[in-house]
Image (cartoon, rainbow, N blue to C red; front, top):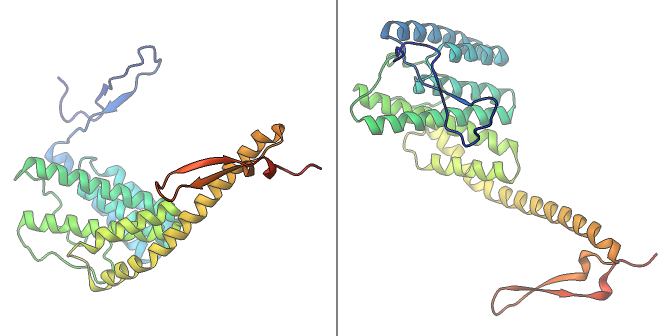
Length: 276
């Protein structure tokens, strides 16, 4: 059996395609020894501190590169530390107005926190609290709240929810700026989740309230626009198919039955394309 400290351990993933030339592999999570983990985490934290300084100097692209270095150094099973880095990367992309990448980074942070929460729920009192002493390890937004519970477990829970709120705020902002029906709908969902969180600062809660008022009409308008565009494309496709028969989609009309609410299709011979 391979050692737990072995860094490159892989196992084959089940597959139905027996004739596949390249077998897909699934990388196992390998935990380092306590000494190795501490060394890697210290190095990652030093890189993160450098990235925070670059962020403060508005060197956002350099900050992203340095956060990426911190991610590469951090053991990949330290979900909280990775979520913090991903959330900070999202903040950098927001500053650069790279909305899509901001959404991706914030989503990765939230996924990591969900994964961590699942582990904690499953393990009960079993908890890895390495790196807990770094209270200022993430970019702190204006009005950010701090955990009041000084117990290790209580502080970590508060930290997780604090980073969750930051990532949701950043993703909601990016989605609302990205636009489009799907993104605006996602932004609404993020802000609805935030509205139920008790740890928001007054400034963040004000933003959430405003967005929940402003987004619905924008989302509806985007939905109607995209539906109209889709119907236009479908109509164009239908007309290209019907044209050789001297017909168009105008020959077919959907009629709603007011009693049942259902629809029926009527054919109108005289509504075809005019002869040239």
